[in-house]
Length: 285
Image 1: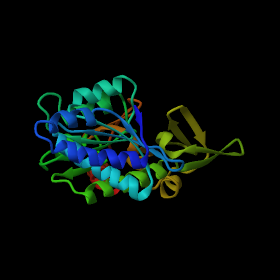
Image 2 (image 1 turned 60 degrees about the vertical axis):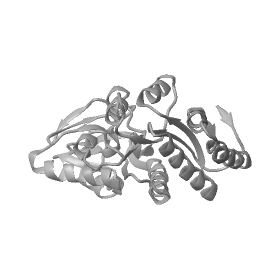
Image 3 (image 1 turned 30 degrees about the horizontal axis):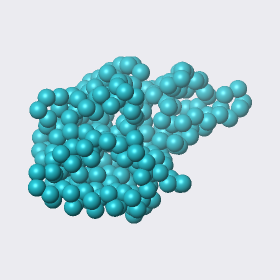
Image 4 (image 1 turned 180 degrees about the horizontal axis):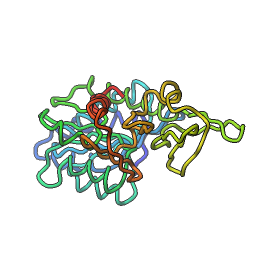
C-alpha cells in the first residue's frame, strides 16, 4: 500500500496522461497503476474504502479520475483499489480487505459481476458493502434484484453519475450511525439502528433482533415504525418488520436476512414489499 500526498497524486496523474500516450506502453502502465492501492489520508472526514472492478482499463481510469476530482473538491478520504477481474476482487476479499463501496461491471469473460455480488451477499454474508453496478445495458433488473444494489449506472459514465453515487453513500453512511433509543428496566439505552436486523411484536413488548442477540422493550410496534425506524424498516407480515440493509436475498414471497433468518412475506404485502425494495435499489434509500 502506498501513502501519497495530494500534490504528489496530482503530479502522478499528470505523469499518467503523459506516459499513457507513449507508444506500446498504455496497457502495461495502467495494469500496474490500477492494480495497486492508493490511499489518501487527511486529518478530518471519514475514510471510504472503494473498489472499482471492470475489465476495461479505460473505465477503471475514468471512475478513478472522477473519484479523485470529488476527493480534491470535498476533502473526503478515499482508499481506492481497482481490479480487472472479479476473481482478483475475490482474492483481495479473502486476504482480508474490506470495502464500503464498489463500482462493479456486470459482464466479464469468466466470473461476472452478478456472481461476485452473490459471493458477497450469500457466501460472505456481507450486507455492509454497497454495490453500484456499472453496465452498458439495462436489462439486468431481475438478476440484480437479489443482490440489493445501492445504485446502477449506465455507460457511458460521467462525473455527475459518480458524484451522485458518492453523495448518496455519504448520506447513507451518516444515516447508518443513527441511534435507536429504548427503555429497559426503567433505564434508557441506545443502539445503532443498522445493528438491528428485524423487530417483532411480542404482545405488549417489542423484540429487537440484533447482530448481538435479542432485546425486549416495552414499546409499541406501530409507534416505533412511524417514528425512529420509519425509513429503514419494512413490514413484511403482521408484527414483523425487517431492516432493508440486512436483506441479502429476496424473492416474491420470501426474504433471507444477514443472519440467515428466513421470513415468508404476507400475501397481501408481497406487492408492497417488492415495490419498496425496488424503490430502495433504485436510489431512494
